Image (cartoon, rainbow, N blue to C red; front, side, top):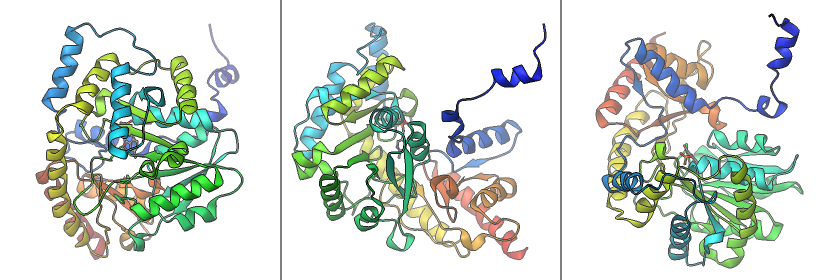
Length: 405
Ligand code: PLP
């Protein structure tokens, strides 16, 4: 049997939908670190988008208990009622607007929640306003759903604060969604109360959905406060879709549990979609997540305190690299320094500079271009203080070599 080259090409032809999207730069950075380690190199990885802590004990135990108690079958596609209820009360209690169970659903990580949402509301050509720097998967998910990403830059000089004026200026008749990621991955910016109110007013006035990606909601440092449009009442609730996740707050990235809270019609559509794609998120993980959301929150506070210590150590050191500037993150666990002063003929972009740091210093960072801002690199401080210190020692030396060259 043999297949002709032409037939082979036919067989392997990919859909135009999937051809529109690129690979995840953050996953690519982790893969690069893994490959170099496999070659025996001492690689220091500032790429990870996940806490370096173990999932807290009580949550792990809840997972084990779920297995022992036989919670190993399909659950409803939207998730177990107790967990949906826990999500509903989370927002009802925190925000003071009532959420019912059918206004929530459980997803396999925030990522699936976002995907469900875009697939459920976008038609071809619908525009989605995405402030930059953005989380890498957002524009790709919009494209997958047939939408049109519209990037709107936030200003480094303005600490990457989201400005409603700039968003309003980018709105057209085709605008369907405004993405608000607070705290932001990668900038760590946190949207303030006044700005959030203006965003909610804009969305209500123009009939646009606000997608609030609050996967880092619990990781906000002292001096900043996490606000959502929900605290402005029922009208704001009607235009808001919240996407949350257990991944970052509870160090549960591998368990794959996220959730959506949204108007009932949107949730119903997302549940239909999930019912025909993945069905329920892993049953055992849902029971673990129930413990995470309803149990003792001390571990979250402890992890946040550790991230704060690391931030306070790392930011001044990054700022002391020659010509490098770095806005102080108010939330999440990433630094997003402007490294354009280090660009040269040999290393003219964030991709080449990140490549240089891997080759010269064996330090992995993620090029800012993946977040829509090529003058920057993302450095995660979700790793030990020792690794951070060693990585910054090496980056200092690598920068000195650049300067000398
Ligand atoms: N949203 C943002 C801003 C993120 O950074 C991430 C993960 O990195 C996610 C959503 C999705 O995370 P998960 O699917 O693990 O819940």
